[in-house]
Image (cartoon, rainbow, N blue to C red):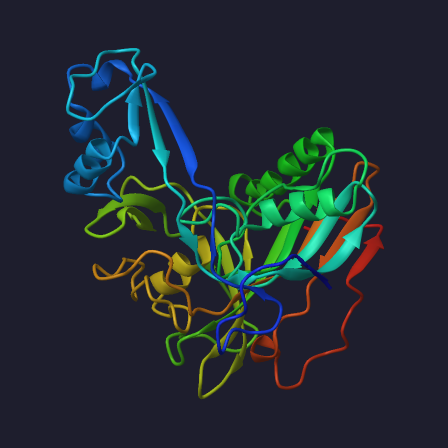
Length: 356
């Protein structure tokens, strides 16, 4: 287990051991160039229309506070924007929430790094997180170790509250190769029945009684997924039968319980929130999911950053460059383990066949 070890404020009462406490960051500078679509707009209208996470009133306050400049000139009042103008918003420091500060290493060959990401840790800066992210922790770990070469960087991402396998690489060429491999699972969608160079298996706990399925009987799900307007979140991905992107998952019921239905889900595409949307789409949302309703739509009163669902990236199989197959496994948390599980495989194994 690696955990960050640096001075900081004391942990708030009730915060789990190994977590990083809430911390004030150094702020951030956001830069953008005005396109023809923004020509003639006011600064406040431009920001409020493009970044709906803040109201026009909030953007007006930021403008009056001197946080925004245009073409290098600090602004204190409105002005009309022109095509090609360069806007800069210097966001003041803000406090980031507590997050897990460490992870288990599944595999590390000096270039490739596979970890078991804990639930609650964002992968990349976004949604109010800048320093409390896996990317920043990897960079700080690399610096603290005075390691040679570039630090490992994530090749893909998992949702903040999704735990499990996350693949990182130090070399840019390795990241490019892995990124292509991770996208190769889409072959299952384009050519059903053919093996894929990538197989991604997730473990989840669903609301009880929503699945009309026998244990062990696979359920293909092909509900298209699209982006729609949301009153609080701006835009949100959800089930979109018309005009959505093709998406394919295969769900297998492992066990029925009083507190939820335990399932494995193999995904052939990687649409945003795909597993959460597809499970909700067939009438069985993830247990504790604060966002998605039966049918795959989104709750109108959902708040950004809410967690509580149970989802774990359990297994990942990739066809290696030499034709061999590599399989990684991150043991699921206790609540996602069947009552009578089979023998636990090694975290990493190499086989002669493809993982598809």
